[in-house]
Length: 88
Image: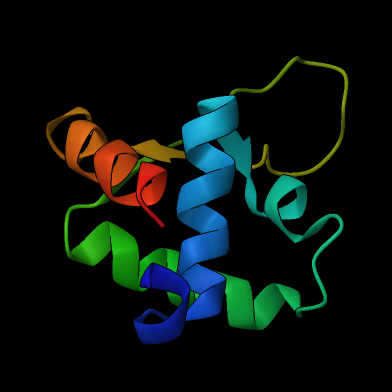
């Protein structure tokens, strides 16, 4: 039922994060047929609504460039999301 009424990209994000806990945008696009820009738009919307939390990346001191931001389910929303996805 959830798949029929929800955006499939957001369902993918929520399912993935409920399984792994925390992931980068690149992690979430792996194995999914969607662009990085599309995924980022949905991640931003879920962060703004409070369903997800955004965690700044941490540098290891050796890898060049900006560290990847990680995303996780907001603890306040996690139980509801898990319940909802369990019945999907």
